[in-house]
Image (cartoon, rainbow, N blue to C red; front, side, top):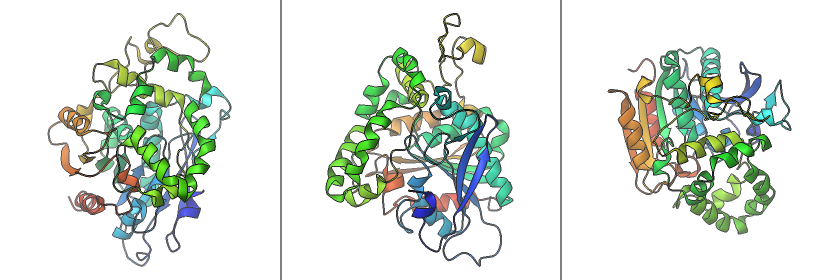
Length: 378
């Protein structure tokens, strides 16, 4: 399903191509105003929505007009942009490699945060004619924002606030059973299979997704999905699941999964760049570098959250198995004084409720936060 096909009648939808410095073509989708806001004068505050792993921009626009975050924000008065990471469903273009080549899949949080997101932020600001925008990240989308802001000081001046929905960073507190078991596989297994490129589970699971698109099977699929991945949801029902499986899962690179596995098994509570290994004298064909070559050190550098200066607000669900409240507190502890802007805790929320709950119970808090930090209101 294309993004244009899922947008309800009356909402404008624009596709913007963003070219990165390393040859990727990223598609961003823009809803410049809501259904009833076309005649409202003046510029609107810009907000960029960034999805998590296995997801795409579709997660913010798949449900109905009063249920999906993109439409809620557009109707509230925002200029809404939706990002896509390289190689996912809506950003497959690459000038240098085909998706059949392993090099096409050599990317993880580092590339998403240090190349893709800055290019997307700059493109949205240029088109909108704005100086700042807000970022709303979900899951890995929060990690990507941290990577950019902790490494590129100038980008903090272009971000009014980051709203973290279920932020995943420090995996010592990670409790999703299936994902944790996958992550605890030996890191050398991920290294040996890196040349596969695309994470194999996607290839195996994708053919069976059609079964879950049938309403009569969707209740079982929902239960399995929540059990092994995200946590028990009280709000994602078979009605939503039948729709969700039209676009989930989006493709994932093996390196992206391996990057999280490294941090899960590191045992040092580190949010760090991808570990290419310390043995520079025994590189195989698919290991194009090592830490010393890439970073000038034996260990990959950490992303230092104390370098983030843009305000950071947190939305957490107490039933979330992936982004636990302990993880959130560790993130806040590492931020510089004055950067932590707000907390919103939802007792009955799990990880995917932030994007798939039809009632969008966090929407009012999010809209209020974004308006409070909108340029011109500070």
